[in-house]
Amino acid sequence: MNSRGGASRRQIWAGLLVVYVVWGSTYLAIRLMVETIPALLGAGVRFFLAGAILLAVLAAQRGWSAVRVAPRSLAACALVGLLLPFGGNGLVTIAERHIPSGLAALLIASVPLWVVIYRVVLARERVGGRTLAGVFVGFAGVALLLSPGGQHGVHAIGLVLCIVAAGLWALGSFLTPRLPMPRDLLVSTGWQMLFGGLGMLIAAVPAGELGQTHLGEVSARSLGAFIFLITIGSLVAFTAYAWLLQNAPISLVATYAYVNPVVAVFLGWIVLNERLTALTAIGATIIVGSVAFIVSQNRVDRVREKQAARLRRTSAVP
Image 1: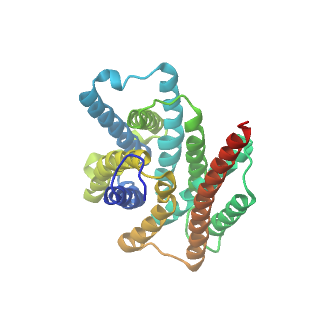
Image 2: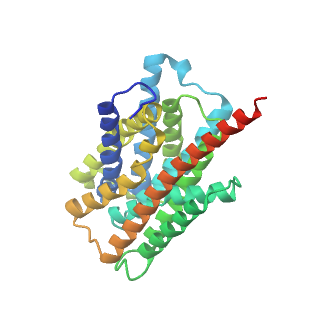
Image 3: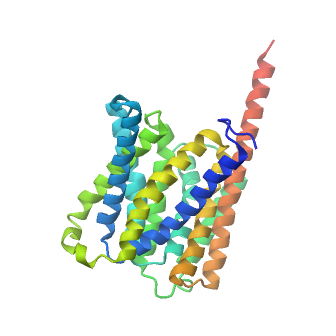
C-alpha cells in the first residue's frame, strides 16, 4: 500500500478502524440519545459544540487567522453544513425515533448511489454502463428494504426521512468539490458542523422541542450517547477521516461507505436486539454489494482516464 503522506500501513489501518467502528456505531448512539433527548436539539448541540471545539483548538494551535475564511467560503460552508450535518444527520436523528438504527444505516448507505445520479443529471457526466447497472441494483435493494413485507411495525415517516437524508447528504458531497470551500479540511469541517448545528438548533424552536426538554428525565445512557457523539463520533472520527484523505488512497478511504452499515446492523442487533428479517438481510447484501462495486468501478474508471490522458499527451508530441 502506497500512502500519499508517508504514513505507515499500520497508521492507515488504525485510522480506517476508527472510521469503520466509530461512524458505524454512531447510528446506535443516535438511537440511544433520542430515547430521552429531543432529536433536533440533541443533534444541534452535538454539531454546534463539536464545530466550536474544533475551530477553537485549531485557532489555539495556529492562531485565529487560520480559521478565518473569505465570505464566499463561509457561505459555501454554510450551504454544505445545511446539507450534510443538518439535512443528512439531522433527519437521520429524527428518523431513528421511529425506525431501528441498523435499518437507518442501510438506507444511508445508498449515498454513493445518489451521488452517481447527481453526476449524470446535474453535471452531465458520462458514466459507464457497469456503474449505472450497479446503481440500478443498489436502488432495487433500497426498494426491498422499503417494501411492506420487509418492515413490519416500522413507521413510514422514518423510512422517508432516511431516504431524503441520503439524497441531501449525497447532494452535499456532490457539491463540496464544486464550491469555494476553505483549503484546510479541518477548518472547513469545523465551520460545516457549526452551521449545521446552528440550523438544527433554530429548527428545534418551531418544532416545539424546547418545551419537550426536561433535564431531569434524561437517562444515563442517552447522556452517555450524547457525549460519545460529540467527542468520539464527531471530533475523533472526523479528524481521523481528514487525516486519511491526506495519507491514504481515496479508493481505500471510500470503503467506509459499505463497512459502516455492517457495523451498525451488528451493533443494533447485539445491543438493542433489533430484528433482522430475511428481506432486510437480502436488501442489505444488495445495497452493500452494489456500493462496493461502484466504489471499485470508480477507481477503475479513474485509472483508465489517467491512462487515456497520458496517451493523448504522448500522441500530441511531434
